[in-house]
Amino acid sequence: MFSGFARATRPLYTRTLAPLGDRILIRRAVKETQTAGGILLPTDNAKESNEGSVVAVGPGLRDVSGVLHAPSVSKGDTVLLPKYGGTEIEIGEEKLSLYREEDILGKFD
Image (cartoon, rainbow, N blue to C red; front, side, top):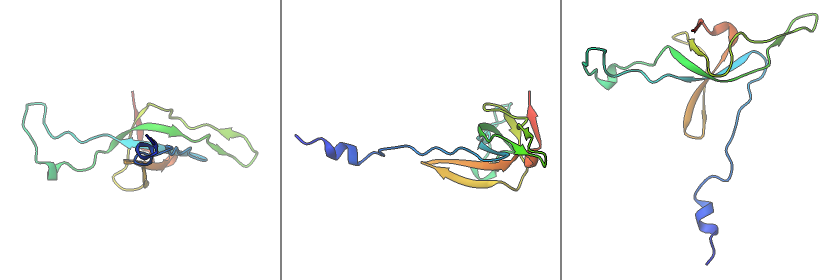
């Protein structure tokens, strides 16, 4: 029997994004809906988290003399994000954010 119908229902390829310059692709952390004491918080009260995990990093910026300055974060780092800013994008069904390195507030150890 013809098996082409099964392939037509799922994506034939996955899209990837490689950030350019000093841009950094971040997956925001899921906001906790339960406190350390076990109290459940309403889901509408769970605002967007202000931290995330670095998914991909651009090569960095070049200064006036042409020297490349690599970003200070790398893939897998956990970073502190500003409340507003960044560019929200969707790759497949996943929501990610794209930030410039200067917009990231800090890096967790």
